[in-house]
Length: 99
Length: 183
Image (cartoon, rainbow over all chains, first blue to last red; front, side, top):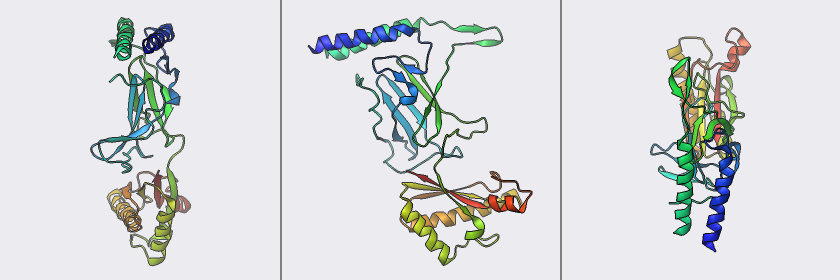
């Protein structure tokens, strides 16, 4: 049963993603968790210096980008300990991590 | 086990077809390059990031101007305090009334951290104004800390005006302490 489900998921993924291979449109996620990238859900990763970065685990893609204040300086909010991630950064995709 | 293995196999199959992508040469450019057009993701602070999904890889980087300033649809600025109401000319001492006022502000605003940005008008030298805005921003930040809040002072002297320094009214507007409330 699990095997059947997994197989159909894989087939669906290939059929959906297959429409744009090699992938020309980088602005959308065409996998089974398909969406426009403006819909990504971020959490906060705190770097070893204590400064914030937006972290997004979107199924098979991972994203990381600096959180900056209006002058372009890093935001070091102290919302979490250094070397930790917090928030619902895995919530934007039903695709789990393989590892 | 079988589910994970299948996923890996599927990814490998996708990867193989993606890997056959060629490079689009450009006659005007000796570096061969592929077309990578990003879209915009807006972070919870309201600032933009360039983002691309390349199949099984994701890429993201902040959208900043060529001057290095983030492009934001809104910001976290929650107060702009006129320096004339907080400090005497060329000074950074806060009197009791202003200390109480600031303490109340920091107690009630509920941010996880406050970024305190000091600014001046263009009178006197750049170095003098950097020093003055630093001392004033640090004075306000120390009030935040005394109220139990986290705060970080930053200063820009006369380098980031919001109004013309050629009029009295403009100069008064430029003498300010901005507070960003980070939630």
